[in-house]
Length: 464
Image (cartoon, rainbow, N blue to C red; front, top):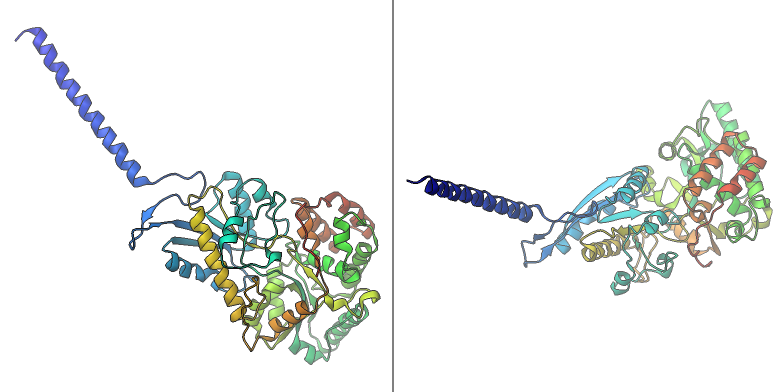
C-alpha cells in the first residue's frame, strides 16, 4: 500500500472519531437542557411540568409567609394546601418570624432572589420593594376577581399601581386588660390619665402589701416597636389630628401634643408602670407575660387577639380603648382609633421576575378570599371585602369588643411610623427608645426627631 493511501485512511478514521465525539456532545447538551428546566433571574420558580390530570401546565410556586403571634390563625399557613388542590399548582410555603422575613426581603430584593409570592406589611414599609420594581402590578387581577375588596384596602402606590393583594385586616392599637387580675385587685380599666396614674399606684401598693410582683402595664421595647407604638397612641389621645397634621406640615414636632406625650411617657416610667427590664425585653416575651397573668394591662395591636384567645381563654381578658390623655377628649376619647398601617394594607405581593405571574395571582386571590371568609364567618373578625359575609351569632368577647370599638369610631388616625419613609421610620423608632431610656430629654427628643420626619407620599385614607 502506498504511503499516500495510508495517510488518507488515517485521516478518515480521525474524522470519524471527531464526528462521533461531536454528535455525542450535542446529544448530551440537548439532554441536559431538556432535563434542567429554565433558569429564572430570581429565586422565583421557573420549572414547568405537565399536571397529571387534564394535561394542564402546572406552576410550581414558592410562598414566604410570616407566622407569629400577630398571625390571625394557623389557617394562614395551612390553607395554601387547599389552594394547591383547587388549582393543581405545586405550592411550597416557607414561614418566618416578622424580623426574619423583613431581613429576607431586604436581601432578596438586592439579590433578585425573591419567591413567587411573599407577604408584606402595610403603611410605608413596602416602598423599597415597589421602587426596586420587585413587585408585579395587580390592579387588573383585582378588577377581574370576585373578591370585592373594600376601597380602603385598595390604596394605590405613588405611581398609581396596586402591588398588594389584601389578606390581612387592618391592625389597631388596643388596651388589653386581664379581667381576673382586675377582679383580684379590685380595680377597673382607667378611662383618663388621672385614673391611669392612680391605677399604677394602686398596683404598686398592692404588691408592697402582699409581696406580689404584678406589672401595672406590660411593655417590651427591645425591638424598638412597643414603646414607639405607645408614644403614638398617647399623641393620638391628646389630639386625634396631630399626627396627620404633622405629616401635612400644619404643625411641627415640637408642638403641644408631641411634647405632652413625652411628658406622659416620663410620668409612667417614674411611677413604675412598666417592668424593670422593659428595655431589654422583646414584645414576644411581654405578650407571654401578659398571657401568663403577670400584668394587668398591655398596649398592643389587635391581630394578637386570636393568639390570646387561644392561650388565655376568651373570657379572661378584654379589649379596651386606651385612656384619654387630655381633658378635651375625656368624653369621646374611645371614638378615635389609631390604625397601625393606615395607608397601604398588608397582604401578598407577586415577584415581578416570576414565570408564573398569572398563576400566582390566581392562587393569591383564592387564598385571600378564603382566609377572609374564615376570619369573618367563623371568628366574627373584620371583613376586608364588601361581600357582607355573615358573622356567627356567638363571637368571642375580645373580638366583639374590638368590633364595637370600630363601629362607634368617629375617626381613624395614622400611626406615625406608618407615614415615615424608610430608613427614617426605623431611625425615629430607635430615637424613641432613647426617650424611654432617659438618654434624651423631651427637648433633645423633639429637636433630634425633626431629622427623621421624611414622610412617604403614599395617599392617606379618608377619615370616617
